Length: 142
Image (spheres, rainbow, N blue to C red):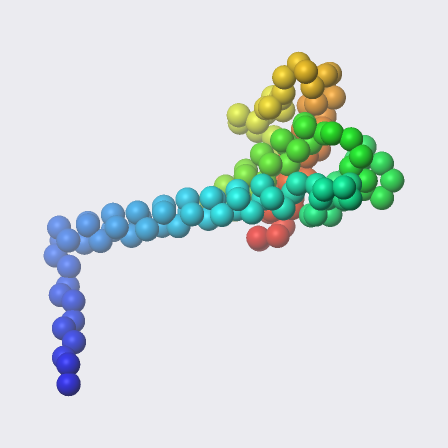
């Protein structure tokens, strides 16, 4: 029969290496989770071609009867993506529920350019999308 050799107890210098490797593995897992969530969200929140319905459920707000998304809403879409990313980060860091744009998202104009029209309307749509995306991810994975 084959004999298995047991690992030696790590020395004081070796335990530091084990701790660094353990932290590195944890960080790689967190990055992988964030990448998977970003990829999953990029496809899952897009409107279905021709149907006018959102895959993740109808958005709330100014979108018409029964959640129809009949018009182009780049502010809402960008806010939804950003809110989803921040919710994933908050969950990863075990932070409490906070669905309001903050930090680099506080201006609520990320992705805006003047060809999109009224900036204030964009900001309102962005804030609604951010809250919706944040809530969707936070409640799904908590």
